[in-house]
Amino acid sequence: MAGDKKKKPPPSRRGERETGTLVRDRVERPRRYKVLLHNDDYTPMEFVVYVLEGIFRRSKAEATRIMLTVHNEGAGIAGVYSKEVAETKATRTVSLARSEGYPLLLTAEPE
Ligand code: TYC
Image 1 (tube, rainbow, N blue to C red):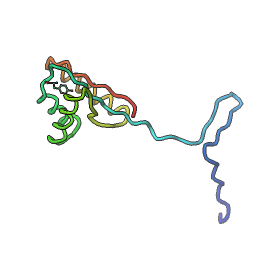
Image 2: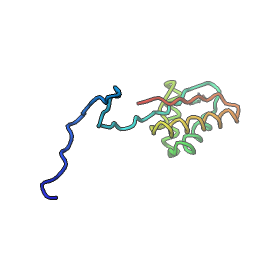
Image 3: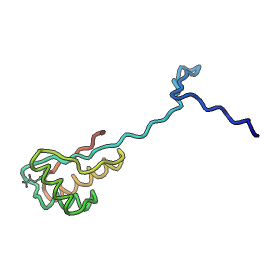
């Protein structure tokens, strides 16, 4: 009905149920996770570029730049994703590296 619109609640409204459960109306954006690539002395540069292209969907130029940053600085960001995607890409890459006998390490951490 005209002029019968529901009133918008104030931002960040908090209240307590009779059970003591704290309720909050506002939602937050899900956190994003960086997948970090770590340097080691044994994984071939070509393999790192190959996984950056194949699993992290980087161009050859980007993949090469990221690999060289990791090689020179010790660690670097392969990509930033939702938690689940970040963990899946890190796990898939580590499995692939192990299957080739390489010690390549990737970790996922919140931004
Ligand atoms: N440091 C390795 C080498 O000289 C290359 C390398 C780069 C390894 C990046 C891991 O995440 C890495 N063969």
